[in-house]
Image (spheres, rainbow, N blue to C red):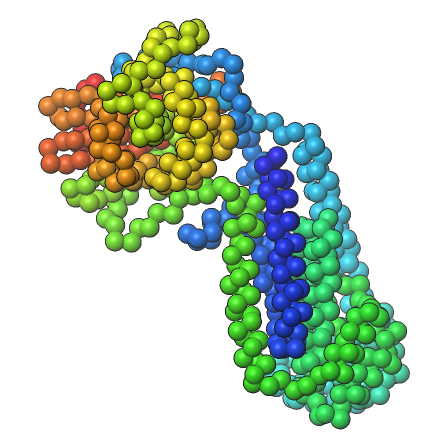
Length: 601
């Protein structure tokens, strides 16, 4: 929840910048673009304001996720003072090279201040929904009291307006004693309401202008803007800048509608239309119904509209051209803010796997996985083919746990912190829970026994800035290691998907990561697990332990067998019993089923 509100704050700062940019553009180009484009530009902003709450990934460019996921428990970056051994049942099934000791992280408890903020925000949303609900109920109640328009003269005038605007849809007109100004309501079944006092007090010419105004709202689907405004005002009820933008959007909508009416009139009618607004400013006061559009407005808005009418000139081709170009440029510019508008903008937790021109086969391993959730990915270089179980999980990025140590070692070798000839790091004398850790370590022993302090030591010598550069260089998962150098690979800050694990292993194996061949060979030797007549298998396990429970298990690696090299990645997760050794055992069951590795380890 803490992360949600921090990013929601960033999102609202971005909103303020976007609105400021739009106001600047509209001010500078006020005389060059049409009134309708002035209004339509607001739809770009409204769309961006909805982006943070869209619950799906839209495309490979913008990985947008629902903010609701943030209210699930997520691990913190603080490591317990003690390191906990993985589940003993799972550990017992592993071979010596499959030792996988994990560090435990705790579920994150939201701080009190953020809980209070969430409660206030949710309460505000509830109040806004209740207010809108009350308004809708009142509107429906008043709507029931309205009667079909009986005035024959006004009926004829209305039909003339329909013909003048080439509208063939049957839009019923009602007279009512309870509305203060003419309005049009409804999207699929629109209807117009004219107050009785307007019918009795206004001339036919004035009523014609009002009807044309309402019909232009229908023609341009301006009610869509009302729905957008309602959604935005509910979600951002606390943000005065958003409310200011919504107010200006509504004013621009009425000015755009006025301009559309003026397009239908002769030059000598412009003044009459403006006088209609002036003469009946009090009678057409602001509507209290958020889902209805009309000719109403407050006195400030009416004043702006009168000035706009007074300065109105027929739209030229040049103005239309500038309007189109401006709209496209503003759309492209503001679209660049989309990643920043996502509540989870900093977390690209779904990998976009381009499946074009790939030989991919979906396999069903549900019987082997049993109650475990997870995925299996296998790539055969000789056949250039992929086998994938549970593609949804295979593209989901999660903590790499100890599998990351492959690359931690590679980075340290490349930085010359250790070398292939001398990879020893002296034990600091601290008595760890695991006896295997309480000795000096080489790269091979540290990798075999997953000695966390060894990799923490070489990481600290490397420094977080260097690590970030290396992670960017090899394009490791979401490329976000965070700040805690002691646990970024275990606390869900850094994330990677099973498919990315395979792709990265392939690039590592063929030395395409840009590192020296000697360093790559040293890491390969460190993760070499077993050789037999079947071939040679290389790999690394990983266990994520949260609240002293093994919640996620990895086994990644590759097999050299004859003229085939297979790269594999398997991840399992459940609430209590998903460890690296369990993932390794399951991997060999899968490989046996696929007749790739049948050796009984």
